[in-house]
Length: 83
Image (cartoon, rainbow, N blue to C red; front, side, top):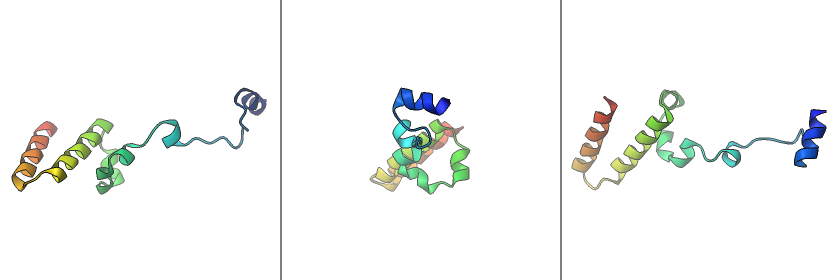
């Protein structure tokens, strides 16, 4: 009964309906922040989404830094936020 109701309401066949996270929800955090590919799944799962985004944005800033001194300043500022 449910498949017939679903098909009548949506016009889509019941058994061929699938979900695609990217289409239905949006891109994953890793898709938006390629810097996270450097982390293992275990490391990434230990972070909250906010922590993962902060980490990725910090890595972007470090990689874009023009000098080693600037990179160190970014790393030190980020380390202070972890305390």
